[in-house]
Image 1 (cartoon, rainbow, N blue to C red):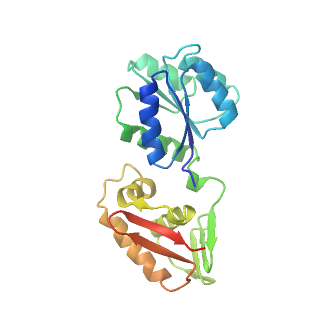
Image 2: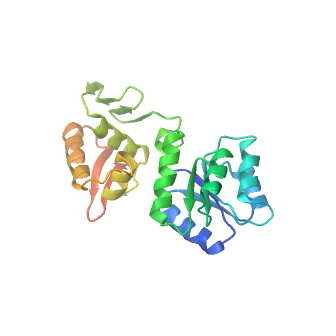
Length: 230
């Protein structure tokens, strides 16, 4: 399950390729455009979840692309540009951009900004339309914040429930502890990765031996996954 589809529009092909590699590693599907007209065409054809939009592009600049998209869509837009003047930031935000990043930027900052904007706009993969995941003898319902194990409701702290829901929404995908801290606790949470271990341990106590069709697994040297067996 993809974290979401990102349209990256920038006339610098090296930046596009670097962002593509980094974002795909984070679990996103990435579509590239190298000028404003191509960005609008890909927006129409690909239905992305968010747009990283460079300001200075040929054919149509980022301001024009932002204006055109805002006429028909509330697609989250992060402006990316070498310009850092307050005027440019204000103009971008007035045109309907959701955030603004100035080059040169760190790829980790871009990922953090994407996650923050998608959380604010309700576009995160785990928060799309599905608020419940269910497997054999297990139901995690995030609308009610309720965990059912073998038909019985089990009292579970919110963060444990969010962690289980995140893992179970992406079965068989391996997450590092840092990724889980980032995606469940939020990028602004600078915690000890052992926090994840403690929450997984508590979840295991609730789920141990419930079913042989799934398991909360440790991937040694990497992190954790919600394993679903065929």
